[in-house]
Image (cartoon, rainbow, N blue to C red):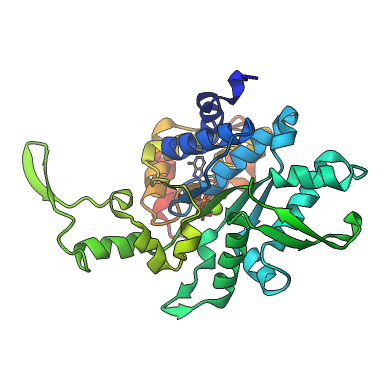
Length: 359
Ligand SMILES: Nc1ncnc2c1ncn2[C@@H]1O[C@H](COP(=O)(O)OP(=O)(O)OP(=O)(O)O)[C@@H](O)[C@H]1O
Ligand SMILES: [Mg+2]
């Protein structure tokens, strides 16, 4: 049956309310999810983006959506694991077993503890597996083999290769072993791949593809300049990920690789004002609790976003840190800090706080 709420467009709109400025990533996720939720085969997705650009937020947005749709429970048995936990678990036990056991637990939570084992297994087979911090299981670190990473990639590969995976059943399922058919599982992996940006840029400017990146002519304010603009998405190829330490067999199991872009000042303004996790929203609640109305002027918000955008490699996380420096001085005694129950943070207050030494 056709359900209008399960079209990629509708799903993208829902996910886009939580994830700012990443329309490519949101759309790709929405398309794959739409297929999964109607029971069609869907390709595994690899998300790559700098720290603090919204990878985990996008995964969480999908989780929140699924949690709110109990009518989709039969297609939404979902778990999120950290890749480095997989590495630890791969040391003991059988490859892939830890993931399957979690899926079984999750399916049992959904179905109730008296559901027959066959139903639990059937539902787990249709599961969704999010693997966060996938870049932590590289097979090479500094040119040296990284055993835990190699094992964890192998463990995931076992599951992604659709082979029947032997699993020792937990006590509640009566123990024993089961051959788990992993062919229907859907995988979404995400990682920041720190250092990848520099290594790809080096490849096309100084390294084996030197000269590939050509300066372009830019005209601005009536002057003509030569500028070299590097975008990871224009140059990233599979070999770069192999060199990073992701094995070709493993990577070939992902049908699409999506790059999340670095967030702009406008995106950061939006996240600062709207995100439920924003330090600003938390501060509003804190001051309101003390009967003080906190207001931040639009110019001050913009200045905070600019300051955050200038911090390298932390993305939207910088907003919290920058904003803390500004409100810190008002938090000890909010009532005394306010005038007639109000605090207005405008540009001078922000400049003063940012100009003072950090700490
Ligand atoms: N695109 C975005 N839209 C909305 N909020 C975002 C976005 N990017 C980051 N944030 C906010 O910044 C914080 C960090 O984001 P998130 O955890 O998604 O980063 P990440 O890409 O997973 O980074 P890491 O690689 O370090 O794990 C979150 O609190 C989130 O609210
Ligand atoms: Mg993350």
